[in-house]
Length: 468
Image 1 (cartoon, rainbow, N blue to C red):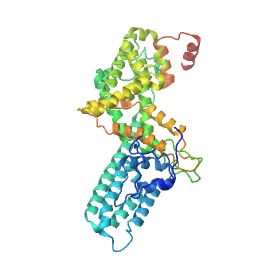
Image 2: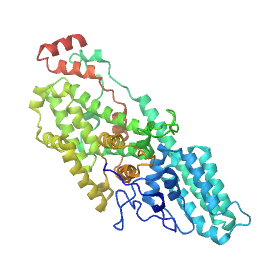
Image 3: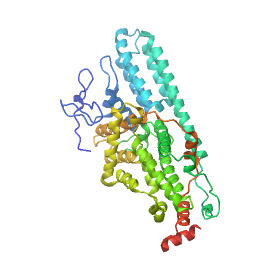
Image 4: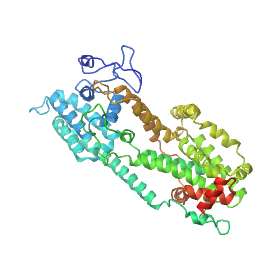
């Protein structure tokens, strides 16, 4: 990140409590003056507090609520927010200034509603819900509608939390039902015995249908990933912060993010397994051509994560060494897809295609054209290097807010894509196979590969002998 400027605290706020130069959107600033790129944590918290004539911009609310958890726990932040509101609006006085509270009430309700909608898992803690109820109880006497709004917000929140819990239960069930690997010892006898599992082509032989089902799984995983997981994945002790980290290992919830990475790895190994499994060269070539077509359909849909998993599976050494098999397959389309996902130039071709898909999504009329599923590992890598490349705090103790504006831009874009509902009908038999079909371990893949096409050099011969 470029060198940042730290204005004096006195320049932070106009008399109304609003600073027009604080970033208005991800990476945006106004022309009237330089954007504020850092501030003390107290100042940033103050900027979050609504008043009778001020409400923080939505982009600021998302950016700060996303990043503040690195410096202060959500319950502590909400407690400070409520405490400040009570003092400023004199909500602990009796009688209340009804006219003043009626102007302030809708603003605090809106802020807390945005918080529950965007970061619902913060409200798994009873303390968060208690603080929410307390502040609304204080303003409720001046308008009964606040009680109704509170009830509606809490009802929606409970539904979201129930859906999240259900999604996490599904992850556990899928992990439990998924067979991690086929017994490697069985592979050596595959040419002398019937197939030890069903094959993908017997379940689904239409590339477009399989691409649709893969897209369904991808969107299902994305829907469960909260924005806070991107921050919590890389949380670490801040060298310039004398306080304790806000997260213990138990509270660093990244369950859904980790499950999504496991899905990518499973798909890689499933593709490689499907190719190495058949005994005959012609059948293996047929499987290769099938997955090339599936990958192309994923690209056309905008499902870059499944596309990359398929390419990665086909490029695993046990698969790529099958030269006779590849020689029999039509691979022109594969090389085109490989070019699209080429890591050269920091994945320049892929990033160009992703921007194209994002633009299509913004202007699309049908849900089918709105799908954007990024190559997730690269998104994680980008966020990781953003985190590693910039300190969270500057030497003067100020929060490096410019860093978190960029973080919010990347995560916010992802949040837009993940909200897309899958427009394709589900096929339970295909989904079940994708989740539970046995896959080879790395050793199993090599053993199957050597059984299909004999070792070509001494290193391969020695490995084959050791595996057998």
